[in-house]
Image 1 (cartoon, rainbow, N blue to C red):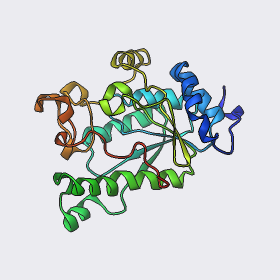
Image 2 (cartoon, rainbow, N blue to C red):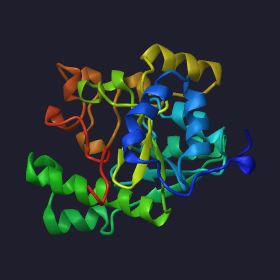
Image 3 (cartoon, rainbow, N blue to C red):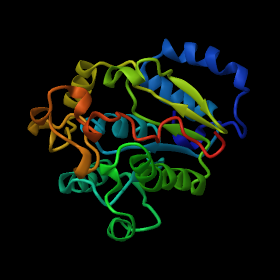
Image 4 (tube, rainbow, N blue to C red):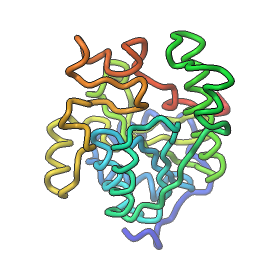
Length: 245
């Protein structure tokens, strides 16, 4: 269905319907989930992406259904050079409507004032993530008047994501995970079929890619749980967050 003819609701579906709808969406394929959300969940529809290892899948899947849909990247100022290059390449290849969320204070200024908080597990790391990832994202979602938020989470990515539903209610927003039940093989097949690239660091063993100071390759760790933040945590806090929660 073309984006011009989509009949989008102006208000969210009642909260008691979430589980029923999630079960219904579980039976659909990823493309059908995207189409349903664009037709039935409230605008503005937004896709967030870290432009990580396999990000091209969600970027292609969602924006081919709605090419003008805003795509939000969080730029902490500490992304890998290869990530910035990947963003530029995919934004050009897929003609993305890219919006970049940034912290209100630059990375250099934060270090001068507060130091390298990501090296301090606990409250130090929590405050770093809040200032550099969570708050910038929520501000951008508010600015875009986001009603429905697409994200590329998959259950196979970590134990913490194993129970994620296709559809969730997050405060006053709806969150859709179209590829939540995909395996790594599903991802690879989609990338190959549509001639889409992995992140440039994938071949070097970077399976989960975030800030340069807190990301390690599979060759540098003993366990995959240590790929991010030295194993102190797997999530940065942006998923499942909202100003009203």
